[in-house]
Structures are given as C-alpha cells and as structure tokens.
Length: 447
Image 1 (tube, rainbow, N blue to C red):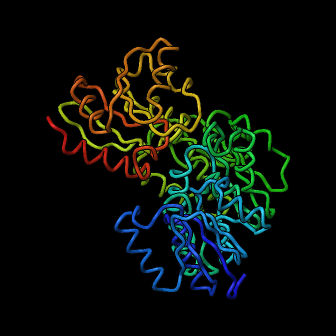
Image 2: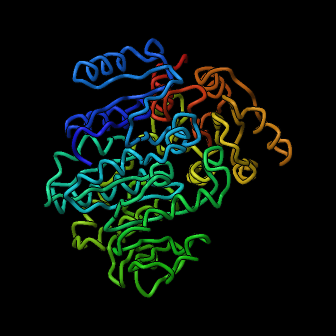
C-alpha cells in the first residue's frame, strides 16, 4: 500500500486526523474529507486542520463533490458506512477500510483485541495495566481514546498492543489479526447504525475471523456460548456464575484460573457484578499471554476503575454523586443500578439509538427515587416508565438543570447518579465531555 497512492480519509475526528498523519508520513497522497465546513469545527480542530494542510494534506470539507482518482478510502469509526461519500466509492469498486485496520497493517507487535457491548473500556484498561507490569513496552489504543494511527510507528516487535474495538471499527476489517481476541458480552446497541441485531453480532464476531490465535468468551452470555467449539481458535472461557473445569471463574468469593486462586473479590476496589466479569475476562486474556499470576493479582488489587464508569465524584450534605457517563446503552446502565446501595436520583437520556428501555426501567421501582431525563429519548423513556407503572420522572432542557433538580430533591443518604443509557451526541461531543461537565457541575453545585 506504500507509494504515492491517492487516498481519501473520511472524518476529521481523532481517528481521521491520526490516519491522515500516518498515511502522509508513509508517502500516500492524502485528502481528508468531512461534510462539515471548516468554519463549523472547533478552534482547536481548525488549528490542527491548518497544520495538516501545511504538511501537504488536501482538505475537502463541506462539499458533495468527490475526487475521482482515489484508490483507497479510510473511514473513521464514527462515520456511518451509508453516507453518500462512502457509497460512491464503494460503487466504484474502491476498497473502504477503517482507521484501525489501516494502522494495523504497519504494526510489528501482536495485537490483543477486546470487544463486547459493555465493559470494553474497563477490561481494556485493566488488561493494559497488567501487561505494562509484565512488559513495559505495552500500548493501549483503539476505542479507548488513543487512535492506533497515532502510535503505530512507535511500536516495536517486542511490544504488545491492547486494543478496545467497537463494532464500528470491526465492521470494515479485511486483514486485521488479533493474537488474542476477546468478546465480553452481546446486548442490543447501535441499532441505528447496524439496523438489526444480526448485523451487530456479525460485526462483533469479525474480531476473530482472521488468524488462528486464542478467543476469550463469556460462558454466561447466550449469544457467545453458541460459539464454543465452533471457531478455528483455541477458546478460553470465563464465568461469574459457573465453576468451570478450565478458564476464569469464581469459587467461594475467589477469582480463579484453571483451579489456581488469583485474588479475593472482597479485596477489589471496583463495584458490581459486571466488574467481576470484566476482571475475569482480564485474567483470562492475560493468562493467555503468559502473564504470571502474581503480577495479575498485584495489579488487580491496585486497580480502582476508570473515569466515567460508576466514578465517585463527591458527597454534598450527605448526598453522594456518581458519574457513569460511559453507560451509553441499556446494558451498560443496568450494572450501576445494581451497584448502588441507596435510593437513586437517576439522570438519564440522550441520543436515540433506536433501542428499547424496558429492561432498564423495570429496575426502577424500589431502587430509583426519580429519573431526571434529558435529550432526544426523553419522551420515549417517559412512555416506557408509564408502561411499567413508574411515575416519578421529570424532563429537563440541560444537564445542569437536571443535576440541580436532583440535588434539590435528594434526601440525605441518597445518591445522584448520571447513568444515561444513551449515547451523548445529541447534546455533547462525547460521553467523556458529558461526564466531565457532570463532574464540574457537581463540584460547583449551588448549595
């Protein structure tokens, strides 16, 4: 793929910018496309785009006119594959691949790929910390925040790459090979992008379609158990409910691997059954890579979770505040409901991804004192609440209004939990921005 091959990069977010820089440094003739006009970008992005242009990258912004001499299209994961520019080049027989796939072609080190509907960030972070203790030359990239393109040229053969991979990143792969591939769980998500659960599951399963390495699977997931014994990979299972003959499991409050005790659950700092599953997955992944148990145990006992995932923020007048902005779908939001031990003032809602909220709302009675709704899904969630005979809800125009209302109405001993069960893009740039704004608002709350 090297040489002055004319290449189009679609999307001016972090991945697109990273792919443009990488391709330009490798000698590609790069054009960076986005349907947004230059003036619509943030000042920070404008400066980056000007710098790219000064380095010889052509900008094609805010237009429906497409270049004719393109031989390869690299798409950012947040860009739907059904937009006109992608459909145009597909119709011309031009290869369309994702940013992660493009970068992986230049990676000299083995890749550990981690996907699943929920728990990817926590598990990838945990795996990254364990691997760094085992091999300091470890890189953590992908959906977790650092574009692979930004790091790949620094990665040497003796390194190891831990990658969080979303369905968006997996749906376009052609040759990506993960030495260890892990699928944590499957539940409805991103159906506005994939349209059907079948398509969504197929995208997730593409993580193991190339190569014959190790596949780590959740024994407790009804979709994943169907794969046992039916792939071309050695399989390692993990389970929080069943004592397995081999793999990672729980035995009398202790996390074990192949009958060897690793650490006691009571000594972990992270809350909730979902985090037990994430920890078991991390054990299975890192044991598959030959990491000694004592290193795994040491890191697990020190691990305190990740930002925006049931993150404790503050206690004000006896009311605890938690940031679970990473809960961008129903399956991801349910664990926080279970993890809270006091009545919840729940802030939810956001971008409509065309999923149902029944499973989430069914948990409200007896746990949630009131739900404070924002964003596109407000009316849909209210109708779901009514259908499940839950009538303590309110609609708010902004996150700040919802936070202040929840605080004003909360009783001492209750908690205010931001756990939206929805994506953030209707009101915010990302779930990180949503969580950061929640944290800032809590720490400056009007008392």
